[in-house]
Length: 317
Image (cartoon, rainbow, N blue to C red; front, side, top):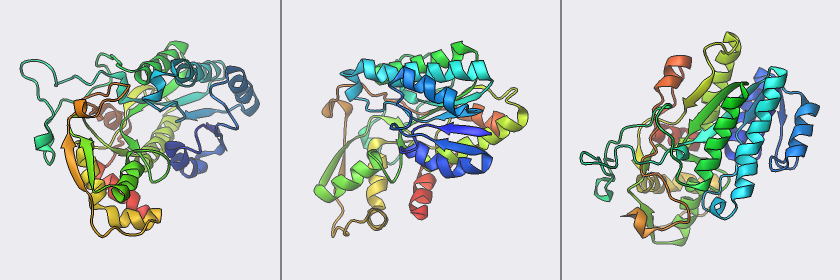
């Protein structure tokens, strides 16, 4: 089996590469090898490589920058997955594609008279918001979310064999993400002011890669029969961005060792703020919690609790 893995220099792609290797001949592709923004180059690469499975974690993920670069975001997040789906349909390949909680507006359980509103005063015990199921109405409120949803739609409408895996709050020990940003800022500032009224499940790239590998193994064994479609894939539990930041700061000494920074004498304070106190070009969902029961019932795959996944990532170093 030949597996084309895009985004291999990214967080999820980098974590996937060694785990997919036992399943077949992995063809790792970074932007230099396969430019997803160039439709002709992508078509040429697919016909040259002739993959049996395409695993596509590559995406335009600069959420705020996408507001000013909608065409580029659309080429990578919408057009490219559609071209992969066309190839998969024509050649009987399986397309495994990652999507996001940003396809939802994040208002589930937040609006209305009986709303359970996230509150910065409840950081240690986040307000329980109802999770999003795969068939809940999609209403993206940003260019990033819209282009990712349109990518999903292109895949589904193609009729190809596919697995669309929606995840949330992805982080890793490398690259630009919330974990590495908080670690850097913890060495630059005595106080970190972090949004506390957005709730979700931080999900490590390692947890996503392990779950994806298991899903592909099972899908192959079943011939993908009954195992196609859209699935939510995020860690268990929930917290706010502020709660996640506090968990990171609590593990600062271990992070310093892994990421090669001198130890701080004193950890910074982490202060809860509201979304309106930290305005951004793109709107963020208040509720990013995903319901993973379809993934569990179909594949018997469960991701760990977000704090356990964080500790596992740090233990692996």
